Amino acid sequence: MTWLEAIILGIVQGLTEFLPISSSAHLLIVGQLFFDGRDPGAAFTAVSQIGTEMAVVVYFAKDIGRIISKWFRAFAGKVPQSDPDVRMGWMVIVGSIPIGVLGLLFEDAIDSGLRNLWITATMLAGVALVLFIADRRAKNERTLDQLTWRHAISLGLWQALALIPGVSRSGATISGGLLMGYRREAAARYAFLLAVPAVLASGFYKLKDIGDDATAAWGPTILATAIAFVIGYAVIAWLLRYVATHTFTIFVVYRLVLAGVLVVLLATGTIAAT
Image (tube, rainbow, N blue to C red):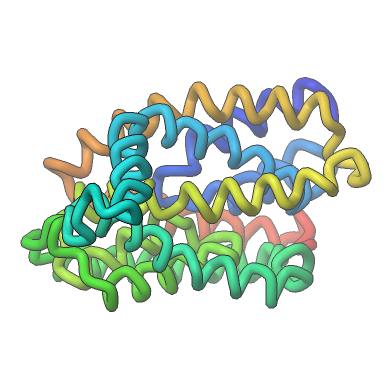
């Protein structure tokens, strides 16, 4: 991977991680189109996501710091377990279990077979329809204070679908939240918080593969991660303002168009499926 490729992929990662359009799909497609058909690799994708998740940590620093502080203080009996921040800490932990377990169980498939672009195109279109239905049926009533244990586990399962390129971590989790009656901004906010443990754990776990993978050397990977952090931070701020007053229709249309273009490129042999 060259330095220029790293810059481009870092920009792509930062722009697409939090929008419900699948960052992993975009990294795969850009790699095929512009980098001689080379897949940036699962290790590069996971590690570059550390940058965007650190943007979440910085953006929600006060909230995350308060949640962690109260969560630990609750063990000392200084804060009741019923405190909203303590409950949120538990909700994030419980919601993170499905993707952790499934990620380890299906690691080989995630790193290889599921990165087939025909699967990516199918997921882009399929989740677009799910997001469309969820958005249209959204009651926009529940807030995060009303998050239940059952919903936390369910949303964790929705997030786990993002192990398949083309799904979108935020797109899946937000869709699940909308179908459960949560407000758009509440679903997006929880999606961001829920992603932090899973993405950071995955990224740091995959650090061992950087350098061994010919497409992901240390220098370019670090550069891409830093760029993803800066751009990702700006995207978080924009998306939270956007979803407060808009539907997800623009992202549904984008996903369907991208899926259609990808199918044409694959069918004509312009790019390879793997």
